[in-house]
Image 1 (cartoon, rainbow, N blue to C red):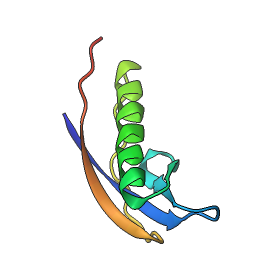
Image 2 (cartoon, rainbow, N blue to C red):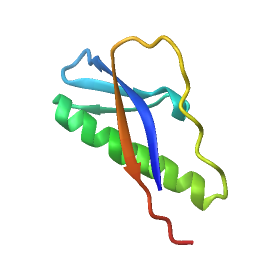
Image 3 (cartoon, one colour):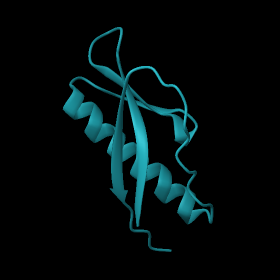
Length: 82
């Protein structure tokens, strides 16, 4: 399965980047570089979606809105064994 979500990158106060995924209840992660932040976001999204699917819930759809920071769309392939 493939899901697409927008992630928002913001400079972190202590260094690196905070990454927010508004469609996933504002789920947040962090990376010291933008590449690391992107990888952390992919891992977080995959875990979030897998958890929802295992619990019998459907993943939320992408929300539209005015977000600060850089918007990046990531596609996650999720395989769930129940």
